[in-house]
Amino acid sequence: MHSKLLDYIRRHTTLPLTSDEEALIRASFRPKKLRKKQYFLEEGNVCKYVGFIAKGAMRQYSVDDKGVEHIVQLYIEDYWASDRESAVMLTPSKYNIDAWEDTELLVATVADMLDLIEKVPSFGQMTRLMDQRSFIVSQRRLNSAISNTAEKRYEEFADNHPQFIQRFPQHLIASFLGITKETLSRIRKQAIK
Amino acid sequence: MHSKLLDYIRRHTTLPLTSDEEALIRASFRPKKLRKKQYFLEEGNVCKYVGFIAKGAMRQYSVDDKGVEHIVQLYIEDYWASDRESAVMLTPSKYNIDAWEDTELLVATVADMLDLIEKVPSFGQMTRLMDQRSFIVSQRRLNSAISNTAEKRYEEFADNHPQFIQRFPQHLIASFLGITKETLSRIRKQAIK
DNA sequence: CAAATGCGTTGATAAATATCAACGCTTTTT
DNA sequence: AAAAAGCGTTGATATTTATCAACGCATTTG
Image (cartoon, rainbow over all chains, first blue to last red; front, side, top):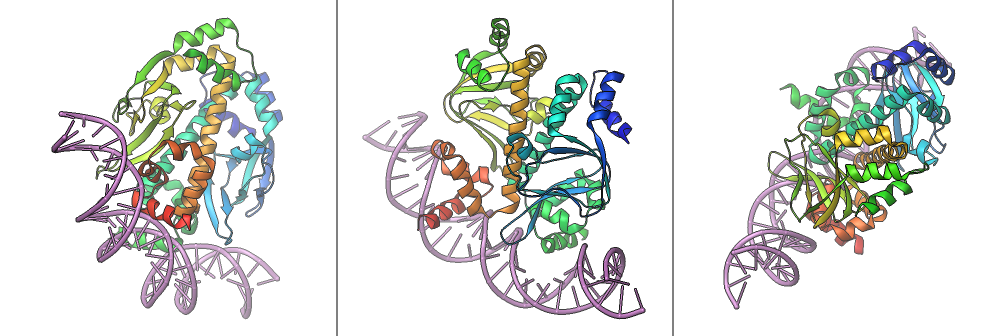
């Protein structure tokens, strides 16, 4: 199961990965299975783990005062699940992360991640790349959220992330886009014409 | 003028900064003055520079088909101005960055930044911290954009960023929040009561 | 197998926000 | 000093989106 992670790392670095380094990485990541609906992180806890998704699908969301869930992230294979804000700032998380499908993870503690970044150059390079990409994706989404109508946001999302459209039910996609499931249903109806 | 940058770096790293390293940094950053409204980056160009703001205020925005500007970032002293998406992906930028006030920058090429990250550990640590923070800020904003009403978004922003409220006119703040200037004006009127 | 839950849809209505136009005031430009 | 541009506000109205309630169908659960 670790091989998926090692492949992923090799694909995201220009530096070589020695077998010593490989061993370090294997030692830091523990396989973990989550059944659908099980939590990886619960609101109020400090996020101490980072999970690489080898198989499955997860979601990160907040719950407002009215009990409504707001999806902030959707994850599938090759994504990293964690609340970076909580992990970096060591503050209680405002989010929940749970499995949407039965999921296989490789889990490391935040402390082990920092250690690997220091000791394994290719790992450091890979995480830097990830940080940059996450930021870019986040900026794009933000720009879309403040600039576009609900319809355009959905179109853009469907064009750029067809995998998510297939994998998650519409009401989660709607929440992810910041609109209600009814509105998304109507937008899709329009779009067909 | 470089001293502001060096101070900033020291404040954001746990590692020491040797005088050799200091020299490297000084050599990479060129002072540059921008008068109000001058461009740092124009839409369609690949972003080749990163600017540290020693004094002044800037903004990053896209312009939609109707010619409406959408503010994606506001910058003041100690902020880094650049379009990361364009700089990392080497794609033409969708954004403009210009000076809102007369501004003093320390400018490095993206290539020099990469070089410094490699050669100066504290610089690498600092940029990693910046990447993480940008992502966190961006995630928070996104969460606010999809979860909150315009009123709450404004409140939250005003509470967390009073400096921006004082420094930029209301119509820019409105655009930054993804609402029209008229709506923001009405929200503020309500809030006073 | 029956019951319960999850999902998407539709209709009626309400609420939030945008649009368009106009105005007064200040600051900048000529 | 006059003209122009920038800024915030207000009113009237249109558009977008949310809310609430109900339904049918499929899937999961006991």
